[in-house]
Image 1 (cartoon, rainbow, N blue to C red):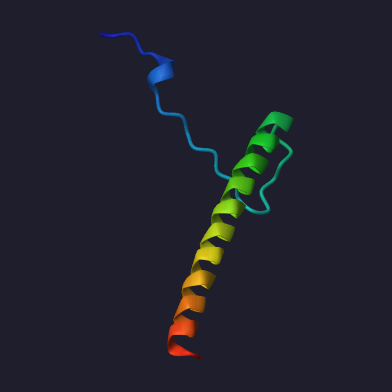
Image 2 (image 1 turned 90 degrees about the vertical axis):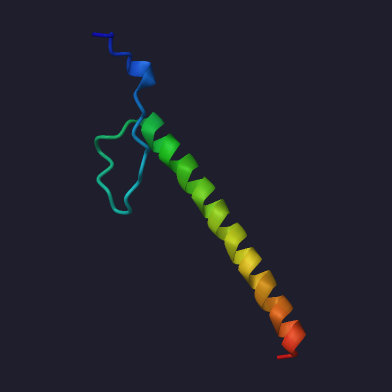
Length: 64
């Protein structure tokens, strides 16, 4: 039977739930979550900008 290598096991993806109890998380874990949330905010803002550009182009095309 081959030895089990912990490095090869997939790591559980960090997920943050709004309102979650933070008392059991370390400062490093909190910093990691902040970084993840900032990345998600940037992704959402980019999508908003893209959708606004599409709407603006459509408005110009149809002269709304």
